[in-house]
Amino acid sequence: MSETRPSAPVRPYLPVHPDRPWLAPLAGFSDLPFRLLCRHFGCSAAFTEMISARGLTHQTRNTLELLKTCPEDSPLVVQIFGSSLSDIKESMSILLDQGFSYFDLNCGCSVKKVVKTGSGAALLKNPEQIVDMALAMAEMAGPGMVGIKTRLGWANERRTYLVLADQLADSGIGWITLHPRTAGQLFSGTACWDALKTLKEATSIPVIASGDLFTAQDALECVRRTGVDNIMFARGALNNPFIFQEYINLKKQCSPSDSRDLHLQDICLKTVEYYRRYCSSGRAVLKMRTIIPRMIRQIHGAKELRKEIIKCNDWNAIIKVMEKMQ
Ligand SMILES: Cc1cc2nc3c(=O)[nH]c(=O)nc-3n(C[C@H](O)[C@H](O)[C@H](O)COP(=O)(O)O)c2cc1C
Image 1 (cartoon, rainbow, N blue to C red):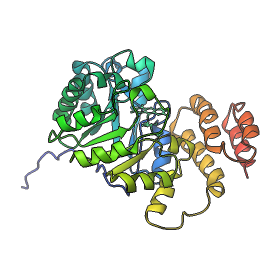
Image 2 (cartoon, helix red, strand yellow):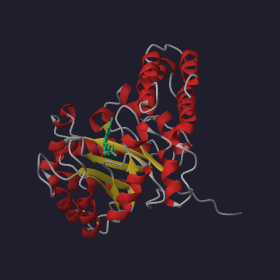
Image 3 (cartoon, rainbow, N blue to C red):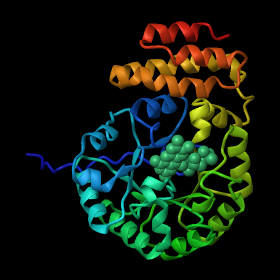
Image 4 (cartoon, rainbow, N blue to C red):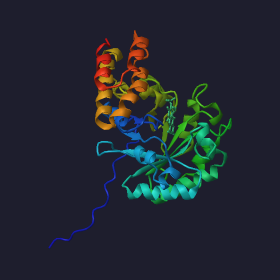
């Protein structure tokens, strides 16, 4: 009789390569339908919206909603934020039990609501705390399965990311994402891509770039100038989920397929299709009112279309507006 052994859990491959662009965590946006939409257009890995470690330990309805996924939504990185090591550990054990494989620690969110709880970018005030959390997470999930996403430093401090990279060397951390602005900058000024190059040269941990990647050309230029291991699109993907395909085409030196405008109606219709399929209907229609106007904001007549979209209460009305797009 042949011997049967329990099979090892299958761990989806997380590509760390500049040809395989990722979708950044985007609170309020990187939900299941949006992730699947981006994957359809060539995104290789995606992050959940940031999820509260405390919320996870209390299994709040909102938190469970943020964890909705499906087999096509892979590989998926669950991003957590928290201020206490015990919450982080407890939430990791819940997530591991639920079968999630990849995790990211949010050390960059500068929104007041998050920072005042001592989590997100507030962790940068005390890098030791980040190191303790990241090490605990890596120990629980295994080597290569955990990353951190950080800014340059708290307030206007610009070198904390290097302290983190140094202290996390050889720790089993799988990647460091750097959004090279200080916490004090929020989204003002420009992302300091030079810091990405500095980080890449300072550490053997894979470096993922985030910050001012609004177009495929921006991402290509960022990789060229900094040597980072990969990039993630954030606002660039919100404005244009097709950015992944554009970037891949550009990277392969194909002519960037067709022009952006030619695809816009298709992109919007695909967006509608994914939200209809994967989001509970009332909320999904409301989401269209924020998502579609972002995507069409540069076309002729965008203002009028936006006015019509924000009045739509059902899918038929939304599709009718989409059909008016030229
Ligand atoms: C609407 C919005 C939501 C975001 N939510 C998160 C989040 O949940 N976790 C996180 O680490 N970063 C979050 N970010 C930051 C982005 O992931 C990204 O690092 C930042 O926007 C810089 O990239 P970009 O300039 O290419 O947009 C968010 C950004 C935006 C605009």
